[in-house]
Image (cartoon, rainbow, N blue to C red; front, top):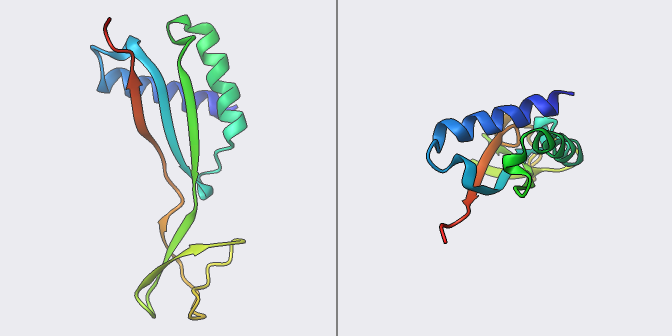
Length: 115
């Protein structure tokens, strides 16, 4: 289950980025491109399995947003959304230049405020 490895990497990245606030994380937002092969339900299940073991994050929420595939057309110098895996611009020209759709990134982290 490579999703658990991804979840571990996410927490490792957050620990390095926010060492002083790491344990105050209450929400993690991810953005995953359609070509990233990330399945939201599988990553959610892996996340829930991880927080069962690391109870510091039992109240932490994970939200995954799927980003569409955006390609670039050299012929008409425009970006277009790829639908049904057809990498063909509205002008009729095929494209092999992907602008968006392969990424997997942490887009936002929310921390519990001190009371």
